[in-house]
Length: 74
Image: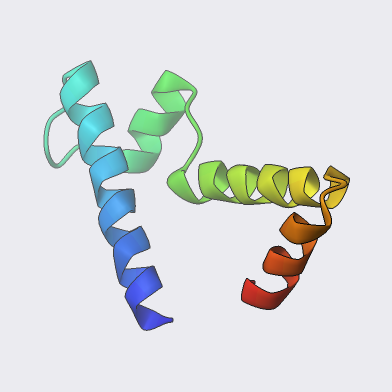
C-alpha cells in the first residue's frame, strides 16, 4: 500500500507544478495562496470527490459482476 501513497505524492506534485506553469506562478510561490487566488481546490479534495463519485456509481450500478469485483478487490 505504501507504493500507492508514493504515487499519489508524485501526482500531487505534478498537479501543483502544472497549475503553476499554466498560470505563470513562480516555483516557490505559496501553493495555498495560489489555489485561493485561482479559486481551485486542493489535490486531496479533488481526489476525495472523484473517489466518492466512483463509489456512488458502483453502488448505483445494477451489474452483479461489477459489485462482485468491487467487493473482492477494494
